[in-house]
Image (cartoon, rainbow, N blue to C red; front, side):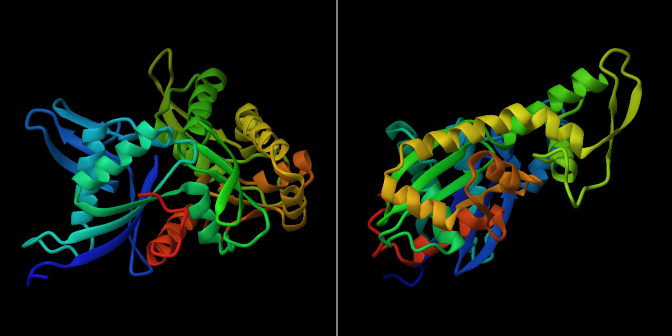
Length: 339
């Protein structure tokens, strides 16, 4: 090994909404999965939070891109550029030379061979020399603290930005899985549509995200109810400014049909679960992770519908990232990692 040659190990949760990088058991980067490109020069202008602040405010010649849609890479070049820039932002990055990178990257459980290849290629082009991949539900289970190699079943429902991943895990493998393109982005679309129909207000996706964070709910009756959230925006017809207070009950109504799709997907996965594993799941309950798990009252609504307890993971936004970091440390021992 030469004087300026060494290997850095990083775990990447490459999410539709956010990218989290773990290095040495610590979260060293947590940024929105957004890149701003200068169209005239073809160069990256900003990534992460800085690029996200530009969304909806672009001037001529600047384009903001979310490289991942529905959990998979939609813009290969932008994704590769985004990963490169994120790696440059790491505290250990040295501008004088580029280290060899060993990566573990998580991917949706419903990924096709083409989609898996795209993630691998993008990671390698961004500097990865030794690239492993792990399915998101498996990473979430590791991050929650479940012994995924035990001879008993556990069920994970990971509600991310682009997909909801549902999987039954036993003996270090995924026995049953269901991946649907219904998650945080669809919640935002529902809110945008609702504000237009019911309040005649035009809002952007970032505004819908803020509404979801402040008053997003799955039930119309909550014990610890949030205060109404004041939304500012233009009237769709007159363009005059409007100020509308939005309640959590309104958002629960507008998200109802989308949440029903998640309920049905969970039931579908349970239908295909072997009886022995099914009984394990009934005893232990089902685990919720991902940003969607933070939707107020979601665990209670799912319990009322399915009659199996639901447990929200500690810090559900980072459960997948934590699990990816655990997989990185045990890459030589975990047979379920893909290369």
